[in-house]
Amino acid sequence: MVELKNIDYAIGGNQILQDVSLTVGGKETLAILGASGSGKSTILKVILGLAKPDRGEVMIQGQDISLVTYSELVDIRKKIGIVFQDGALFDSITVGENVGYYFMEHKNLSHEEVEPLVLEMLDTVGLKHTLDMMPDELSGGMRRRVAIARALIYKPSLILYDEPTTGLDPVAKDSILELIDKLKEEHNVASVIVTHDLDDAYQAADRFVVIRNGQVVWGGTRRQFAAQRDKMIAKYFCAPYKAVC
Image 1 (cartoon, helix red, strand yellow):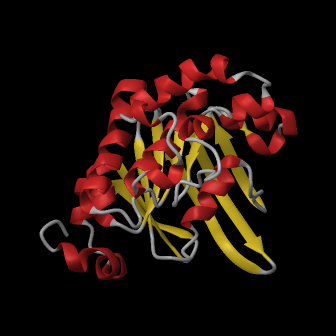
Image 2: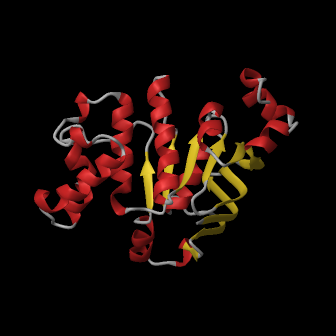
Image 3: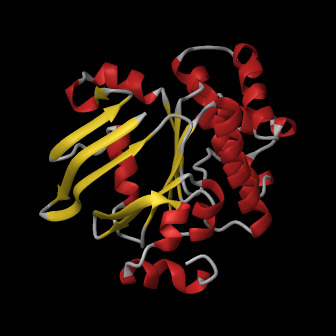
């Protein structure tokens, strides 16, 4: 699905990513772990084509997005959903209008034409009853699930999650992580989860990549992660999780 090859990216002389390589297979969930400022979220921007690397290749389903036209890049992005940390919903329109926003604003489709697809997406995330509600009537976890419904509107092959459970209570966190797993199993959706929360990674991911100072310092499965002996990784991630580390 995704392959980053030897990615370098800098802003104003500040090296954000250095020689980053990773892959995401179809129907696989990859967790990118790291401290704040380590470069995790920049990797999502690179995958979307919002940040152009200074070196390296960004392959999406075998296509190098650095070599395509802007219109081709727009089409490639339609295969990728994105869920932002706070959900990023428009507060002035209903839940249904948020989910169907692109089709109504850019495809000139009516509410009546878009509503069946919107209801399908909301049903997938267990929120069909919220169609006419406003975002401020929803809990934090519900807002996050609406954001996932909006990301599903194109029926993407890949969804990117930027800290998807930040600020949520344990029950809401579990509902989001269970939904990510459901989409993988029932809809064949690959996922990339950027997080600093090891619990999230352990619950949802098939593989881990650890980023430190813009570099990949480790990658592997959960079992391999528990067995690794890198002291800096253990210091950051494993102190609260001695049972698994």
